[in-house]
Image (cartoon, rainbow, N blue to C red; front, side, top):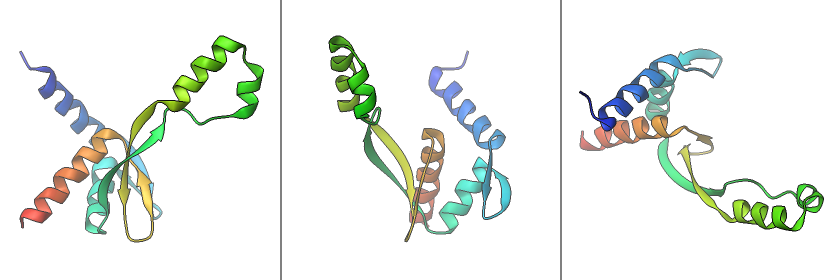
Length: 110
C-alpha cells in the first residue's frame, strides 16, 4: 500500500504530463513549460495575497453578519506561488512550483 505522500507525488507527476500550456506560441505540457522557465532563468518564489479581493459594492449589499464574514475572508492570507524572471513573473500551481524548485536546486548543485 502506498502512503499519501507517494500518491501525491504520483498525482503531481501526472498533472505535469497532462496539463497543456501555451508559451511563446508553442503548446507544451506543464513539465516542458517549467523546464523552459528554468532554462530562461526564472526562479521560484512564494508571495502572499488575500484569499479574496475586497469589493466595496459586494460589501455594501451584504447584511451585518455577512459583512463580518467577508472581512474575515479578505484578511485571510494565502500563499501565492510564482516564477520570477528578470522582467516578468508568472503564477504557478503548487505542483509546478515544487517542480521548478527541484530543477533550480539541481542546477545549483552543478
